[in-house]
Length: 299
Length: 196
Image (tube, rainbow over all chains, first blue to last red; front, side, top):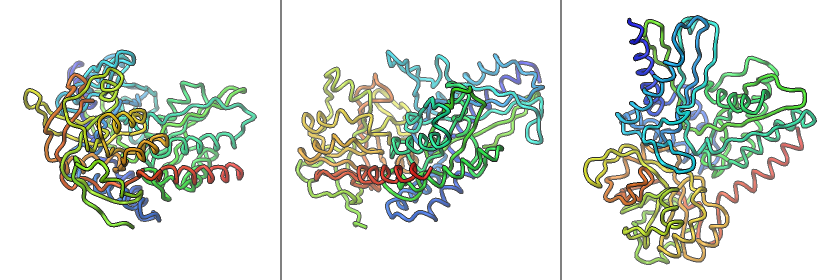
């Protein structure tokens, strides 16, 4: 493979992960929705969950989009520590792939200038797609010289329900829990519950918000590897599902499908908390690209 | 659970929806008109009046995925429903100036839309958000479009069959199911916070 061809492979992977994410939901999410339907006690809530499950099946049968909101495209990249790819060229390829997907698949264009509201018509633009890079050691799943692309087309209904609070040490863990539950009540029906609650804890304001987004990407049923944080996830999950907001916010047991917390060390004077909600149609997909340009797709 | 009704839009009797009560399930035949943030801003903040008839109409909060097939002609790709709260400040204008009587959306209008629904006999109908693949199968055709310069946030005319299920979530008697749920959630929140 020539040096240029690998960037063509990255571009193709960006395009494919975007389209795949929009059409086929991950197995962990489908299982969580089915489980929510089994455990739902509210008749209205059961009705909404039935339609959600039916919709997932219709999207797969007709190879259509699960939701009409093609989102703001977010890419989270895990770069193996020995990966030889030029990240400036990777970034350009991700943008080109997003544009191709949008034009070839007649995807709804969502990216506008914040003042003039002029639409770029490509789902790309200044600083879009949003890109995050993380450098990781290799492991069994990702060779040290490879790149993993996570695509998260983020719908606006849930992205509009994003929150940041710069808590202080005196607020304690109780303050953290309280803020997160307040966010869920404030969001109510708007983010299309049952949601995945992405929480960033610690760091600085910008890092905290990015961690909340990373938390959304984690498959359901996984926990943070820090047992103290994992216990907080479980406690918040149980508490959130006592709120009674329910599917589509019209009542029921299933308000959230999961609570995921990602954390960073923070300043002695601070305890920032960010909440990034993800709708029930939690679209995500991934691809691993090797330096030889081989691409393997996953969720 | 209330049985499922069938309504056809547009309605000719503007008082026809006053009997609907929160919790009622229904499906819709006929036409629904797609509308969204930028469309409302054009109509009310810039005073651009559409040619399409909105009297007795059911609106739906959407900006669809479409394929252009000719001058002013579009095919559906994927059509679903967006969050209604952003369109809340236009409720009075739509019902009073244009004669709209039903708004289909997700997440609800805000409580200050309730007296407007009461005054004009309007209802808010909740659909399942995110269920666009299914919704698209219930839309037979895109018959008309206006404000194309706002693409994709145009005014769209969709012909629908068995569109739903929809739930009357806000009726013309001052009842909002969202207010019921939120009030209970706030009480529960206070109880949970006291435990922490």
